[in-house]
Structures are given as structure tokens and as C-alpha cells.
Length: 120
Length: 336
Image 1: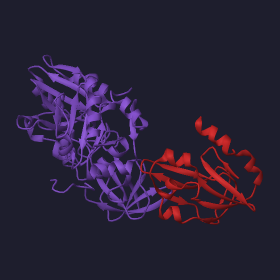
Image 2: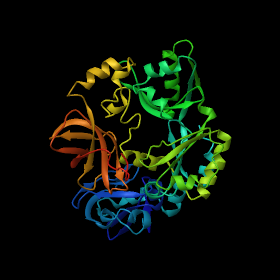
Image 3: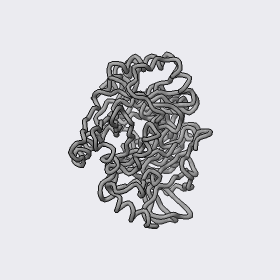
Image 4: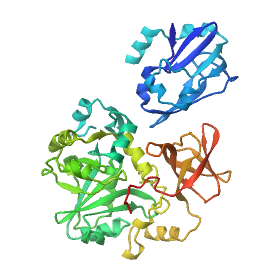
């Protein structure tokens, strides 16, 4: 089960580790994504802190961590080929983070709530 | 505000954006696809938001010579002439294209500057010169790319009020002015003939690759056309014009700011407003920056206070290396 942030990140959690990416809605809003950068493993973040950036042709956008914790691993694939974030946003994770406060997940949206949120 | 082609953009599913109060298409299929379509085939742009101001009367020519920095005598042979328009202090009011039109002239101005330019022209016009803002009576479609002539050969352009081989992409092509009610048919005909609809997103990357200035970025009331590298459009020998004295002083100042081209060495992308370091010292700012779809790297136009051996752009707190690149970044085959 995935949870969704208001900043349009998704997170799937397994064994206390969250896997984070950007949503299909986010990639559609951004357009052609040409750059992706994530903070390195070992970085400790609070929920809502900048975890990296994606850039479309038109503009740069920050990626925010939906939860607090320590980045364990980053995915090189979207840095090598940023267009993966357009073609397969649900499969293209950006980073894995060890949750320091799993209760924060309760503040995120489920799939239905997120769909309503995107419709405004 | 909406252009006469708003319905076309909606029907094509364009992603819309606000541009100086105008609801304009940012992109249709995607900025990269549209950019490459213009470089390789033919794209069309709705530029109906641009302003058109008519200048007529016995003193019209002499007035334009005073108002603009370029030499209007070029219009004896040419259909149109590009020129900056300056303040007395050398800052830029706008950059415009002047067309011969009937017994007078039509001045095409940037959409966001139309009211300001109209007021500036009226303020400076002597008696006997008529200045009329005709913007709402013109739609405008730009047809750009190596395939533009072929596409134009397939459509009926007899309704055009004015057509000239101008553009803002670095490619061959033309801009067609026509009555608002005639614009949708020509747009649809051009699409049927194979032209690709292109939005403001591609227009910006195309003009940045071609190093064409955009008012509010490379030109402003605080940036003179000399600083923006437009000296070839300033004619000191034509007689007096508004801003001449200050521009003449600037032209002899070796320390004046200058616009340079930068190409990023890594993958990062420079954006407008990012700080630039020359030999490690803050020396300027990115005025326009984007990924260059045709070149595959991040490029920037930057206004700097000095030349240097090394350049860096500060991107999200990191100093990213850039190399100086001769402008334009992109030049079509055979272009002068």
C-alpha cells in the first residue's frame, strides 16, 4: 500500500524502510523531465525537507521527503535517464529512507484521497 | 486575456500558462518534441498576444529615427527592421520590429509592453504623427523551420494583412499578421499541411539556443541593448536618437556589463536568476537558462561584469562549472 504527500511524492513502506518516488500527476504537470538529483545516502531528513530536485525543460522543482529518517540508498536509474520519471513514475523510485517516526505516515493520503486531491 | 486561437489550443489539449496576463499554450505534445519539430521540420506558434502599434503622418519616419536606435533608412530596401527602443539613460523600453505598411509603419512590440510602449511613443511623438494601438485588430501566427516554405506553399495565405520573413527561433520561416477572425482557419490549414503546433515552452528554448534576447531577461529598463550584445542594431552615425548620449559613453567603456554564453560541463541546468562566478568571484547573473534540446546540455545567457578564465553557476548551493561559448549556441546551416 502506498501513501501520497501533498507535494506529489509516493512512498511504499516495508520493514521500516520507505521507498519514495514522484507521482504520475507530478510528472504530467512537469512535462519532459531532463534532470534528477537526490541527496546522498546518509543524509538525515525531517518530513517535508528537500531530498533532491527534478527539472523539466521549463523549470526546477524540489523533491520533498514525505517522512523523517535517513536516506539508505538512491536509485541511479533516473539520474542516468530522467525520462524514466515520465514513462514509468510508479516504478522509478528515487530513494529509500529508514523511517525515524512511522506515525508520520498517518498524515499522508491514501490512493483515493490523493486522486481527489489532484482533482482539486 | 485570450487570443483568437484559444479554441484551437483547447481543442488540441494544450497545457496553458499565464504570460503577462495572456492565457497562452505552454506546450501541446511536449517542449522537446516541439523544439525538435521546429529545428527539423516546421512548427507554428500563436503569437497573437504581441502588440501592434501603427505610426503614420508626415513626420512618422523622422519620429521613428528619434525613437529607435537602429537606422530606419534600412526600410528603403527592407520590408522590416529590428530595433531596440531606449530611455534617455540607455535602458531598454522594448525591442521591436518595424514594418513598412501602406503610407506608414507598423511597430510590433512585446505583449507585456504594449501599453507602456504606446504611452512612451505618444509621449515622444511630435504633432502631425499619429500613433494608434491596433493590437486587438491583429492575430499573428509564426511559421518556423526548414520545412516552413513547403508548408506555406500548401495553404491559402491570401487573407494575410502582412507577412515577413521574421521569427524568434533561429530557423527560416515567417510571421503572418491577419485579422482575428481569419486566424483559426489559417491555423487549422497549417496543421493539416503538416505543421506541428508549438507553445511558449519551445519558443523559449529555441530562442535561447539562438541567443535571441527576451525583454525582461536580456533586456530591461536596467539593461541597455549594448550590454545585451545588440550593438549592430545601434546606429550612432544616423543622427540623434533617444538614449544616444548614454549609449555612446557605454560603447567606449571597456568595463561595461556584457552578455555571454555559458555551457554547463555537467548535467545541471542553469536557470534565470542564478548567480555566476568569474574566476571564483561573484560577477553576474543568468538571464536565461534551460536544457538545450538540440544540444543536449544546459545553456545560459549571462550578464557579467568581466571576462574570466573560468565560469561557474551556483545551482542549489553548489558551484557548477561552465564553459564560455560563442553565441549563438545554435546556428542553422547556411545562416550568416
